[in-house]
Length: 287
Ligand SMILES: [Zn+2]
Ligand SMILES: [Zn+2]
Picture 1 (cartoon, rainbow, N blue to C red):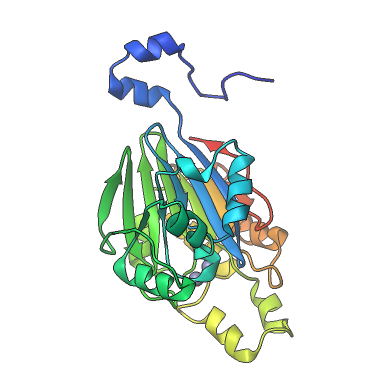
Picture 2 (picture 1 turned 120 degrees about the vertical axis):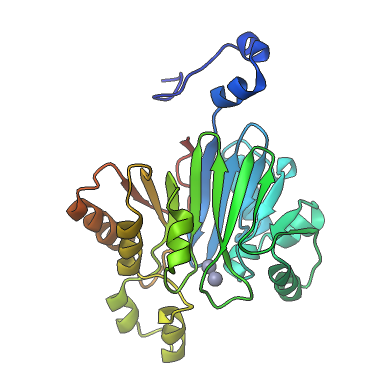
């Protein structure tokens, strides 16, 4: 079946051309696709009438190209890449996309320095100061500090005319500031990294690695993600994507049960809770 998605208003092209810009913008949708998320790679794509952005580039350049192709897009048409922090599962594609294709990277100075050292490459960084907001075309990007073991890690709230998208992954615990900054989100990508018991019982990881993951600068467990959801629940928030799941120490079912179960207890049945995968794209959401 083709046609407009539920709730979306479609206008004929000649009519759009005659509309004042503000009205036109409202008539054109904002699309959001998680190209993949997990401990081994993170990358999402946001498209508005004015910009095409990646949020992190944590797969190889080839993988990102393939995943964009499956939604009929190419890296060459990207406006920019927003970078949360320098860890490899967020940056591996930058050599191909930023250094070779010269797509600008929006990040703070320390993150650029650490990423360039790690990838042994240079790229064009457009710097923001953590905590500041800036405009990229018709998107306003709010940045905020998150507690994680990187140089200057951040989360984002991307404000568009159709709704706000929050990014909250790679943090050991949710500070008051973090909760405040993602509260206006309509859609939130929220870290649910591990199930506590599976992590404790894991035999592959040395004790020191487990300590790092569990620390206040590590990663959010399923229960900690449920706590975040509980604290920011509102009529505005309608969609949570659980991201950055550990392959060995979590499962989509456990993550959804922890967060979805908590929201159900609270009666917040208007919020859909979906898990994401490192291996496959999530369906494109039209805001
Ligand atoms: Zn990560
Ligand atoms: Zn990280």
